Amino acid sequence: MEHEQIVNGLLGSMGVSVFTGCCGCIGLIFFAICMWKIFEKCGIEGWKAFIPIYNAYCWAEAIFGNGILFLVSFVAVIPVIGWVAAFIWLLIGNIRTAKCFNHGVGFGVLLTLIPPVGLIWLALGSDGYSPLEPFSFSHPFDFD
Image (cartoon, rainbow, N blue to C red; front, top):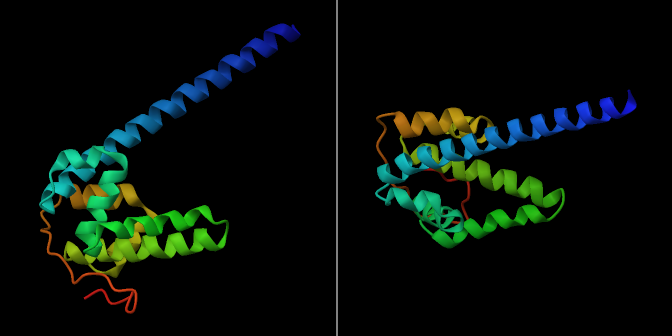
């Protein structure tokens, strides 16, 4: 009886792992397809959305006006303080993204808190891209 319970527990764990892995793959494909469409709206070739580090560089180039600024995201490797700083940087980037697509600050918050909804909206919506002034650390919250 005990052996049977162990086997059932292992099979249940494997099923959960397979399900989680499939959901993760579907989410990754969904994200890449949405980014493909958004990149095309920005005038960037869509295939660049599939290359992991390069897509972050291209996105930072479109949103911040300087691609190398994607490296600021790596501050998240510092525990607690880095996480807070990375969240603030993500929020600034998403608000700039919203402004580039003629949306307000609320849409930037939506992109930060519920990314799939915001990505679908940007990818499938009729909003056009218009670049902002290049990002400046001296005025980080100047979104106009």
